[in-house]
Image (cartoon, rainbow, N blue to C red; front, side):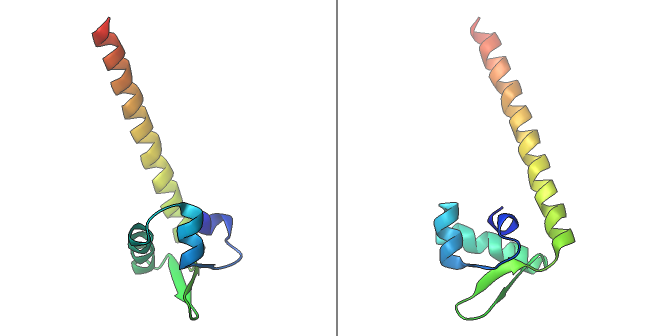
Length: 87
């Protein structure tokens, strides 16, 4: 998401970790997956990351949103069941 918000510039690993509030290990894992898919590329030293393929990046972002919506729906259903079972 940070790359989408900063799509006109690249972000350093330090910037991504700081802004995401995630561990370096988790950030590197996600960046590697995105790089392997040709979605994100790094350049320079120290490495800066940016969107390499905007179309694929948008597809990936849409898939993430869809998975989040499904998970939220499932949690809502489970919460509803839990409320119903207590009554």
